[in-house]
Length: 290
Image (tube, rainbow, N blue to C red; front, top):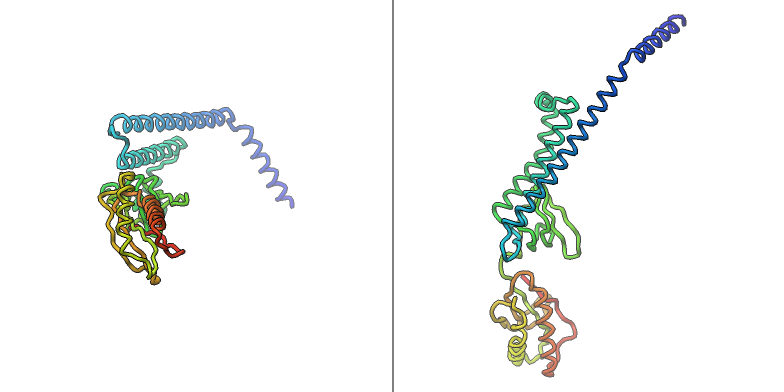
């Protein structure tokens, strides 16, 4: 018991001596100087980031945008450049903060084998995303504004970054796809599209009268739609699953206009056919596009 009291008293005296002899002024000066240094570095990199992005935006807008308007290709390159600049500034900002705090970043990374291995494994996905993103850009697989299908996701490309590609679906869902997961891309914005207008018919429908009606509608409707390329091709009677008879008309059109053209031409065809006194089935098949 006496030894315990003596030890406690000794520890108490040592602690009091430590508190009394501690240079609080030097400690507060160190804290203040480090805080001001960190604050200055943060403000400095914020200004560099702001000015750099401003210069990049002005450069793309002033020198690289053609007179006919911004292209999807140029917008894609602009986004990738912005992302690369952002990650570069972020890396040097973190490095500067750690160095100011006295952390030997280079020695720490080089000396910590397990940490380096874990960092390498964690960065493997990032590097894969980066390499795939550059490949997509170089091979011109995607551009901002393209209508694509990537795996099971369909929609419009809204952003191509260093790590992810953003695709907005028709219902407004924003999908973030890691670049390394992009293996097969179906780009529907590069070539002309084929819109198939399927007019439902019955076995008793006088199909021999339909071509003249459809040609008359085309003569009126095609000049109103400049996205239609060439003359619509009348395919004729075809069978759709499950055993549904349709009279099919194929339209070649510019990408992105196929769905509007399908609705417009199908409506006009049905109206003209009914005005000619031809009865059609009450059910209608959905128009197809490819």
